[in-house]
Length: 276
Image (tube, rainbow, N blue to C red):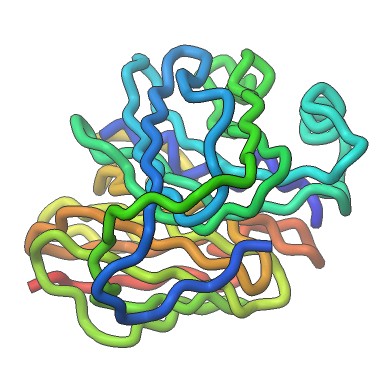
């Protein structure tokens, strides 16, 4: 997979995305909860958490925008090796698996996802670039997270209201989204990694306006980041949870293509929806 780092964070410059699957509908599932705070330029997070279903809530307390990519890395490899690979290597190492994570929070609010984590070594990573061009990863936003085998908690999560399936290069929604607190099941069924980044569009603006603005970054942005899931490799599942207000939203994937290295939005992985 080529040039993963730059494209993954492209949209997040807007000033104002093996785990077992989860049942689509359920009354109660055991869920652990962790809080992550992103600062300029570090993550505040626990060092260890138990395995199993985990609700991860990301809040941003820095001046710049941040996200939290979760990456599981293989036994025998280190966090320092991971950081070096992500900043120097052209391709994603075979011993690294992207399992999602919370994308950039809405302004003034959190970004929530639920993911089923198996025991192992993980990293929290921020690929967003600062105005000076350096990725936050290079400024210290790479933190170890160890997932230990442990007993399940008893807190339930709500059932999924909508399913989003990611593929090369489409977003498929099982039904329309309606306003309110919603849980969205996101699964990547494509052969390549994909993400879903939500942008809440300004009145009268479209997904095409977002793409045009990103090329030049002139004038006010046509929308604001609204969370989502970070990159998921094939077969991985995250649950996004957010409070949706009526209006238009754009769904975009900026993961670079394994063939030509261009972000997936350049291959048409853009979708606009209306929330009633």
